Amino acid sequence: MVRSRPTVLTLAHETGLSLAQIAGKADVVHRAADIGAAIASGSFAALGMIVAPCSVRTMSEIATGVTSTLLTRAADVTLKERRPLVLMIRESPLHLGHLRTLVRLAEMGAVIAPPAPAFYADPASIEEMVDQSVGRALDLFGSRGGPFAVGAPTCRP
Image (tube, rainbow, N blue to C red; front, side, top):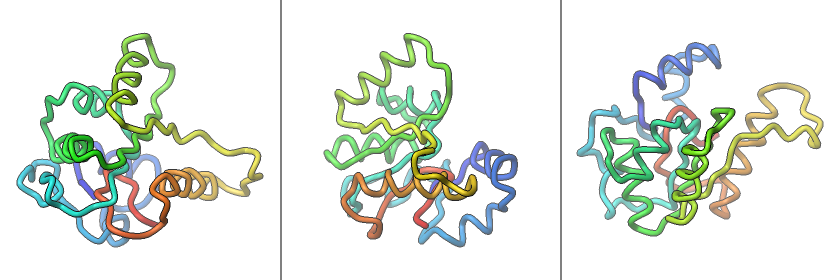
């Protein structure tokens, strides 16, 4: 998990969970400023990376290769190494510039997977909807386990 100021704000506002509670679910937690962390190297053995949620700023940095944080550097390396990169873009609505950036990322090999609620699964709670979205993202790797470089704030369940 990559921890950034937006991560902490998002967690506090949307989940009611503390950073410590979320970090307890992650194997490793990195600071966003730690661009020397293992996940910033192509030699880091990972199945791929999930960025959830993925902001328009993060999406844009990844698309241009102009990375300013560990999160975007690790995503850039994931693409460079031809590993799966799943971007859970959740901002809406999107303008034409956003859509063109998403197309560019898809052409580069990223999977664009907005965390759309699966109402057909008849979820009983928001937690079930979140779990279903995370499960679908993990299914893109063919496994719900194993080493991942995971963007903030979602981590392996």
